[in-house]
Length: 453
Ligand code: UDX
Image (cartoon, rainbow, N blue to C red; front, side, top):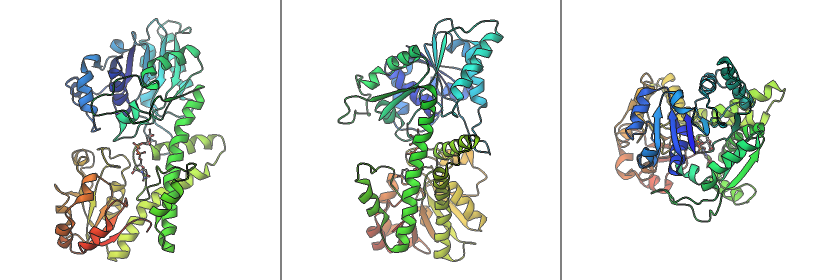
């Protein structure tokens, strides 16, 4: 099929590369010429494991353009994967979505086209996108007839494992109020649904995955599924973080509790990792957006509201723990291990490290930080942060009063503790992700503290 994708961010680019490797002809559209130039030369503008190598592999099947005229008329399916950042009131900023929908309408071909909202968009956006396309077609003096179907196909990919999640998803959700549209999307995804494709190099098929579930729904249900999924996952993490706080007080260990409840198949083990809490581009934005939508209907969404409060309190608890240990923060040197909101990405959106570092600087502390991948992006996006970046994680410990592990990069788990802990002025290490080997740290002379035990 001819597939066009508007927006070459995490979602758009990963989806494009995945569909190209299934054999579809993919055209990616973006307004950023410098990004397009990188992509044409086989370079990924974002760090995501396997993305660049797979991009190079499928490059002959991909086109990159800023021209809707070159991308839309021949497309069987157009994915909209533009950014929908949060506005201060929690609503999503839909200016990119509006621009994409209008431009699609201006260049719509004569054959049936399925326009798919892949970005996380507020409930009702499918209908809105359809009306924008219709307006643009009519402004051209044309009639839309039954040439389009607007569908919702939410993505559930996680940064760091975006390609694994795209090739081997738990399920595919497609929602539309038009049976032909649903049929075309089912066909597009058949190789994934049946797992009939040859796995790309480095991305082996997980054992026991004979097929992938397909959930076909109406348009609005698919839109709400995305918000409900992210709200549930956010709540699950906040739930274990709230239990972690109690565990600390009563002298229990939250890691046992996560195991003890997670083995109940009704609860499940994943997303019960206590720590500094969630960040990133999705959970904060989507929980704010679902609350904002519900407010329009007079619904309070108290559970999701509480999940947000617990989450942001986790960041404050890091400061409280440091104040308890160091008493005075002014003039103290505190190292942050990890800047990205999670490992295996260079994404800094709503990264807890930014918030924690900012609060420390406000209190007069000196903040050092290291990240294996995200430092270049950090220098570019947060040049005024006041953080002092260190080239190696080891340098971060030199004369430090405390070190906080914020992002659980694999390489931080096996640092040479016997060498670096004695270099600290005060050997306090706060493991914000409960991922370090406590025994090794104690042996090296550290005062070790985790979250929830
Ligand atoms: C999330 C959803 O998982 C994905 O389905 C959706 O499409 C986009 O949003 P992502 O933000 O990339 O994906 O990362 P995810 O792995 O879900 O982690 C989000 C945050 O939660 C990270 O900051 C992570 O550190 C934190 N987290 C995750 C925990 O604190 N504890 C856990 O047990 C799991």
